[in-house]
Length: 414
Image 1: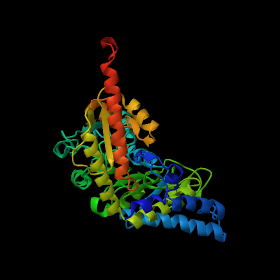
Image 2: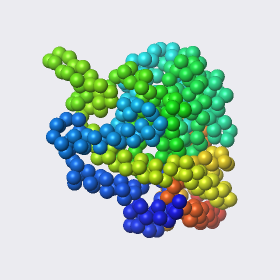
Image 3: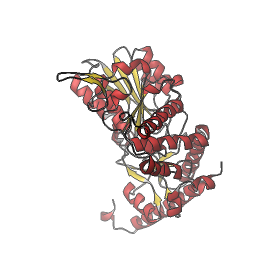
Image 4: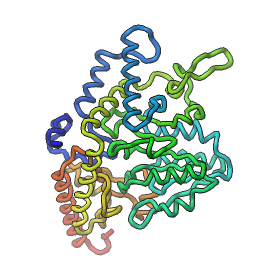
């Protein structure tokens, strides 16, 4: 693949030619085909779905449902009805927390999560544990930042009702052994929810091989529009999840005192859905399929390894996570310099990273023992030149702050 040609598909790189965009774990840039699909929809196909009988509305409905089939194929699901459109990963996880586990979790039962979870895959389970009296268990990490599978084997047992696990850490960039943990959960008659927000953009997913019961991911992290997400529900569980949003088009019949649900998946998509977002996500998946997910995975891992190696050679820089990189996510800190100051210095050089706790406070504060980190997250359209510019700028930051600290009076040193 010619990355220089690929970058030409993304208008923002033309408009910001000096930009080094390294915040892809937060959101990815959009190719022209996705932007044009959104524009085309509003200009030519702006009709509501699943409602009207006139021809253009039916055609828009067909396009909307075609994307559902696209997504099912993309993740290896044999049943498009297992695909529910949501606003994003956060809403998808909350749908399951409220629509299933709120009714199926009792005092004394257990939920297992990893200490590396994003808040979206933690807070709903914290609240449920507090409401129901269930116990929330944290699977720890090994010394090199991987999930401690031996500890997971000890923690997941007969009392476990749910294992909620991220596929890829949004801070450490490690890939979790989802298939192995799925087998462990199912062996103990527990269900597994997979947060694939960082996984779906970078690597192939086949639900027929890993067997999650629920899976969530967001369109905007994989070239699609914001405000559109996907919830996968194992077909065997579709009738056991209760919709928590009620309204138009998710019902079959309504009387003055009662109502019946529509068939799946419509029962989970109350009101007018994000039709444009769905159409845009379909184009994003088409683009990803053209590049192929195995190529994207290798590209991101190679870039992540290259950046890790570059930063590891800079004095006074701490790089978190294992030496062998699996994804394009690399978090680091400069000793004695606040991450926000590092990010500000990079910003002045048009290098855009994220500094903070990355919605993973237990991991950053309790495991990494720091208040925040700088995170550089690469995607397939990034280059080694981007990595070099970041490393060069970080060296300048180290030299500047280290020199300044040497000349400060002792009582002013932080």
